[in-house]
Length: 124
Image 1 (cartoon, rainbow, N blue to C red):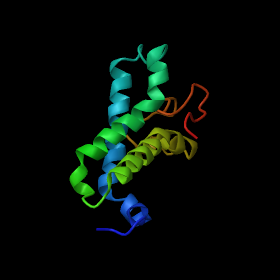
Image 2: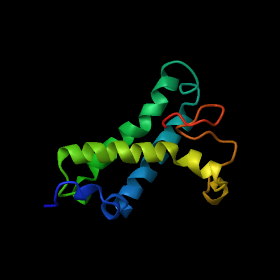
Image 3: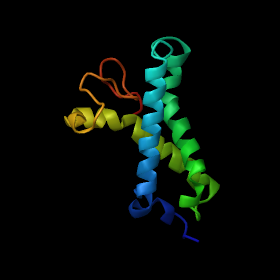
Image 4: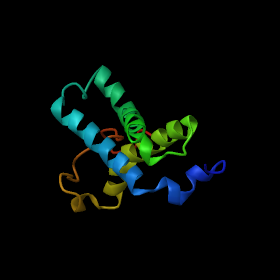
């Protein structure tokens, strides 16, 4: 059992399992956007899009529960929120640093999961 607060130390937070959760979240949201582009351009889908990374990351954290055996329920919930927020803003960060060309499938003109049309981040 870990001591209180130790679960969120940097070496525990940035494990390869959590990076895979962020990548999986990003892939799920991008796949959903590409399969139903009209749904996510207006109405309910447009309002749902900023929440999708948080929901998918939360689901993936609970699906990979064996990777965090000592985590409490509250720690898993917070972990899902943190990983979802990082995944949502990751594309924006990569684009601002000009690194989108390094990742196959990303183009500089593509909007990220957490971006408005003008490139401003939705989750700050």
